[in-house]
Amino acid sequence: MTTLSHQGTLAIDDARIEYRMIGPMPDVAPTLVLLHEGLGCAALWGDFPQRLAEATGCGVFVYSRAGYGGSSPAALPREPDYMHVEALEVLPRILDAIGFRRGLLVGHSDGASIAAIYAGGIQDHRIRGVALMAPHFIVEDVSIESIAQARVAYETGDLKSKLARWHSNVDNAFYGWNSAWLDPRFHDWDITESLAYIRVPLLIIQGEGDQYGTQRQIEVAQEECYCPVDVALLAGVGHSPYREAASETLAVLAEFTDRILRVHESVAERAA
Image 1 (cartoon, rainbow, N blue to C red):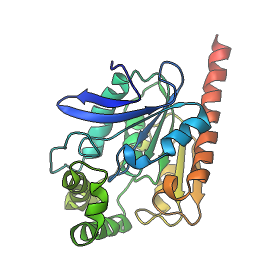
Image 2 (image 1 turned 135 degrees about the vertical axis):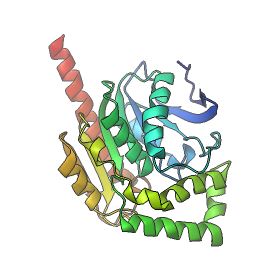
Image 3 (image 1 turned 90 degrees about the vertical axis):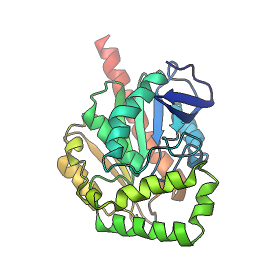
C-alpha cells in the first residue's frame, strides 16, 4: 500500500500513474474515486473534486490513466476491450494501493463505463454505490459520428493544441481513445452483462443534449440492472455535466452519496 500525499504517483506495473487526493484520507473517511473521460485526466476535473469533497465530507481521489495527463504513455493501439482491462486489471490495484476502505466510484463517459464494468465484474464490498455521468453501455451511431468528428478537429483544427495543455503525450492520449472507438470491431462492444451483476445502488447523470450518447443508455441500465437505478436527466446540458452544470451535478451527487453512506452506517449500527 502506498503512503498517500495530496499529490504524487503510483507505480502500477511499469507505469507511473499521477494522482491527486483531496480532503480526508481513506483511513479517515469514505473515498469517492473519480474516473475520467476518454480525453480527460486528473487536472481536467478542474475544481470539481474540491467542491465534491466540500459538499460530501468525503475524500476525493482522482488519477490519470496510463496515456493521459502526466502518467506514463499507454501501449498503442488499444484493443476494443481496453475498458475491461482498466476496470478488471488496473483499477483493483489502484484501489488497493491507496488503501481504499469504503466509498463510491464516480465515472464520466469512458470512466463511467469502467466503473460499471468494475462494479459488475468484481463484487467489492468496499464499493457502496456507483455514480455514472454520460455513461456508455452500448455503441450508438451518434457516438461514432461524434468521435469521427473529433478526429477531424484534432488533425485539422485546434483540438490538438487545446489537449496538449493537459497531456504530456497528447497523440498517445487522443489516438489511444479515438482509434479504439473507430476500430470496426468496436461496433460490437456491449457491457450490458456487467449491469446485471451490479449489486449496489446506481446513479446516472446525463445531459439531454449529450452529443456522444442518447437516452437509450439510460433505458439499457433500467432494463438490465437488478440494483436500484436513480436518474438525473439535465436539460440544456451536453456530454460533460460536471463542467456544464456543475452546481446541479454536485447537488445530485452529494444527495446520492449522503443517502448511500447513511444507509450503510445505519445497517452497521444495527448489526453492532
